[in-house]
Image 1: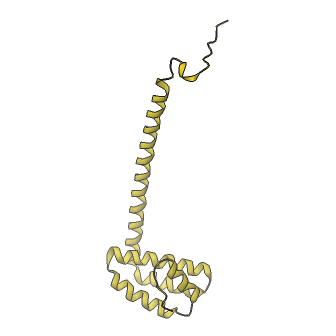
Image 2 (image 1 turned 180 degrees about the vertical axis):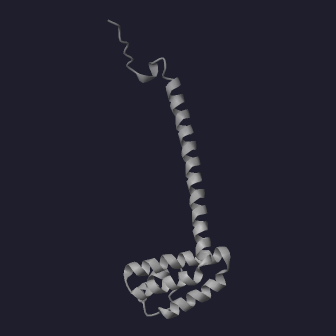
Image 3 (image 1 turned 60 degrees about the vertical axis):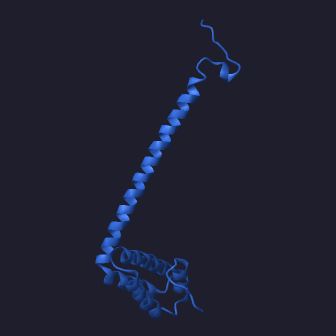
Length: 133
């Protein structure tokens, strides 16, 4: 039967100075890998969003029509969808055109749906509209 050594205090074990150092190095390597993976994922997400915005920019009349259709449904989920669409349309204009053109088109959209207060409130919340009254 072999004798088992019992070390009452952790730092008296002969391997103690090595293990924390290895653990720290492993932690740093893990954090570097996680950071690199996070940056890669963010880059991929940014590229995917840009590709989607380019597709939207190529179909702006259809996208505006879809946003109008959602606004006409007069339901909360449709208003939310219209707001998401308008944010994407704005971003597509900023990527491929200009903000002035978008602002004019948005003004027409708002004038068409001015009586839909819940929709206008959502537009305020996403920063596309400032309520003057």
